[in-house]
Length: 95
Length: 427
Figure 1 (tube, rainbow over the protein chains, first blue to last red):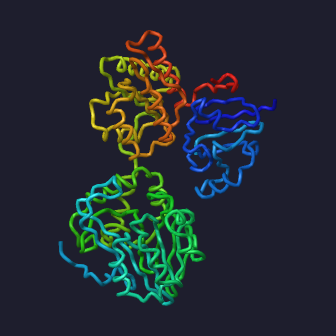
Figure 2: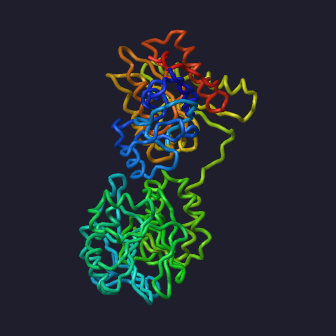
Figure 3: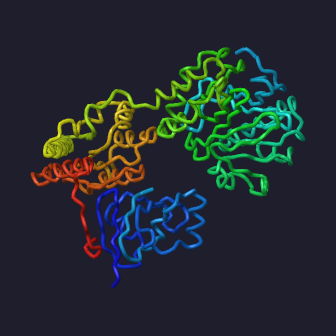
């Protein structure tokens, strides 16, 4: 099965995950500092900075894109409850 | 209080510039978080140029009648070409929809950050096609004079900006450099002593954003300031630079730290178990500093929360790099003095600091994860899992406390070992 490696920069932990895993599924388990509100891509509480490897995430949905715009999210920021890890190495930290 | 302001007239601030705001002397609480012994004012201004009039900010909605009466005394609605909102909070934007209706030819100038927020505050149909988003260096002409914008976000909302009228050396600063002090004499050289209000307002509104305050000051300080016209409180025409200097001083750290990093351990303890755990955490942190061998690298300090009101600890925390909290669990919760301190931390910027938790318990031990959750919600990083000890801590549990302190210190000093985990190994 294809794998991705995601590093949570704030806690210094890297996790190898199956491709397709959403950030939310792993960040809570390792105690990373990303916090969650609605968990459905609407509230923007889980805004996360993609420090590197943004190209290894599935493209944002129309809904996520709109929420990011409405909340003035800077470039290379994603919602952890939506973003799927597709492969390669991705480094993230709470926005 | 002398009635220096007549109810239906503007007040001259500079040639072609009138104050057209409203006084609210009876207000005693603002935004829930501030007391206002002297009420407040909602300052709005009209700026006349050869090709039109600009209105800068409005007032709280229930003061609209006063605002419009003063505006009508200095300008016709047909002359208004420009409306500037330096800040969208309802105490400054309350009369905006009605102003847009009365001056349908006027364009609205707000910061780029304000534009999407307008949709959340008003019916978008009210201003469709009439908004210009502006940033630092953008200008709008009033004919023989122009307004220039400075993007100064997070003072204290994302949308805040300042507007500069170079022709008069006049800065319309929004909430920045303002205060809640209502006095009909309006100008800082005429009103009562409001210095305490100026500092108090900074402490409650601006302090959590002090990094943004410093960035704004970098933009504002080079200007040849003659007058600062904030959105609340006295207009600062006598020595306006004194207030800019005060903000610079307030936004700096206090006494310099003697070490590169500081780690604070706070605890509260009923029978001494959590206190002894705190001592072990502090000892573990000290050991990490000693291993590094670098003198002046880390200062570790231990504090009994019971020994102080929250405020001095908040001052301490603002300057610290790591915060570790110890609380027993009583009735399924961390104890109130811990929450009192944790709920006070919104007054300062704690984002990105390192946090951790520990504590003893009798049955369930909820305090530690609850504190960790609060720290994450405050946007601290919590890289080291907390330590719980049931009833009297064992030697192993004291050792776990020392490891907690040590690992937290290593993270702080950038010497923590990177961990690599397979997701399958996570519970």
